[in-house]
Amino acid sequence: MEKQNSGPLQLTSTQAAAVLSLEKPGDCVVCRETYDEREHQPRIIPCGHTYCYQCLAGIVRKGKNGFITCRCCKAYHKGTCADQFPINYNIVAVMIKNKDIMKLYPALNKNQTSEGASDSGGNGKKGSKKKEMKRRKAEMKREMKEKRDLQSHLCKYQAQLHKWEAEHLQYMHKLHAMVEENKAALFLLEQVSSKIEAQQAAGEERDEKMHDLLRRMKSVTTAQEAVKVISQVKQYKEEERVWEENNDEVFPDFNALNKHMQVLSERFQVPLPRKYL
Image 1 (cartoon, rainbow, N blue to C red):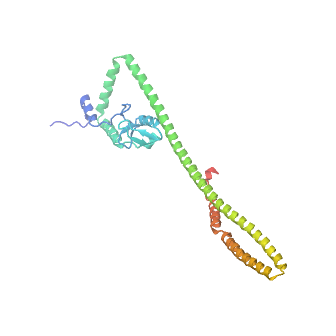
Image 2: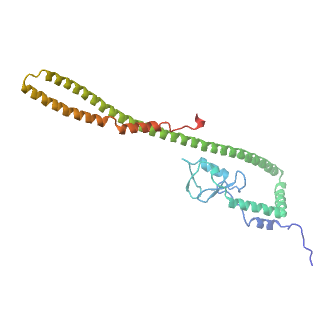
Image 3: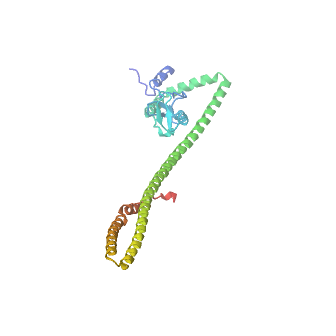
């Protein structure tokens, strides 16, 4: 009976490549870089296509009027910041699974390391260039992370600015409505004031006519003059009754009064937030 080997399974380079080729996280369709957990983090947009964070941020910057265009299907989506689009956790799950495979089969790490060493050992200049490229790539990744953090802060600040703009527009609409209500109330008051002035002028004319009739009544000497004055007094009485009815219609004008009181009660109902005081 053969003794079983309890150590880790040793794989050839071909077998190791076959293990990882079962599932791949894939590459970004724009930059062709493999998805990772940083600047190439997979982000999915509403149409179902996925881009790395770096390329999606570029797509957002090229967007117009708060909308982006999918590079794959040309669909339009609302978006002003790459952070607002969710992470594609299906791809992340594949990335985690591949890491577990690498831990389970250490022979794969050794195989990849030996292959890298053989490629760089043949040419010293090529190896130094690879080191330089690696250093440059690390610097760029660090700069991209800093830029990503800054972009995230800018996105949050922009969202706060939009919120403040909406609040100001809301107050402006309320103030505009108050102005229109005040104009309507003022128009009613002006109409009532004009009617009152007309009634006052008519009342003064009535007083002059009454004094004139009293003088005529004192100077009556014949029966014919008395009949004429009595007829004028009756006409005056009828005109006086109509004038009094008109007074009842314009004083008080409950429609104008109610509108006035309603506007006064609403003028203090637009409080400003404490942060603006």
